[in-house]
Image 1 (cartoon, one colour):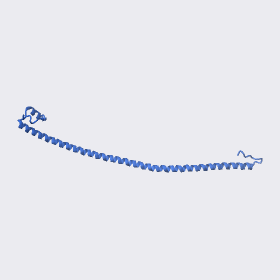
Image 2 (image 1 turned 60 degrees about the vertical axis):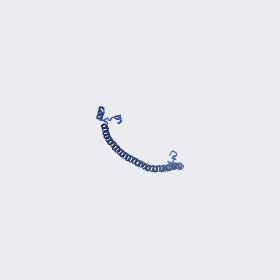
Image 3 (image 1 turned 135 degrees about the horizontal axis):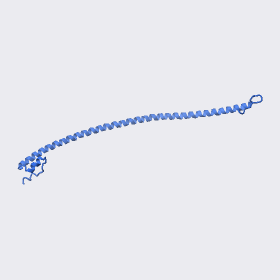
Image 4 (image 1 turned 180 degrees about the vertical axis):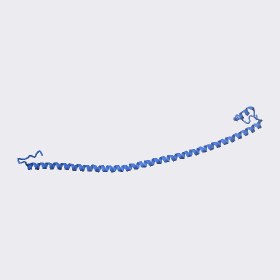
Length: 154
């Protein structure tokens, strides 16, 4: 408005008004053009962000699926480990029972062998003329001397 001056009659100069209107129009068109460019740029950014959101959603589905699969796999591993541990424990218990039964069988055989050896020892001693004092004391101490049965025959 600084270019507009009133004439003597109090009216504005038509040329100045036209110039001012042209300048306002030019400024307005320039501003409008900048606004349109900005809108276009924002729409492109919006489109890119929408595509990124879609990628993130797709990745989210993939990640959720991977996590779910990992949880299932982990649970499967834990279940399998527990099953194997139970099987091994059962096998160990069975082996323990077998070992205990074998040990008991060995103990029973040893007891029978002891009885048989005592019977044989008594029979041999009886045949060879009885026990001497050291043999009698050794018998009471559950120690059976190893003797050559031919020693007494000489």
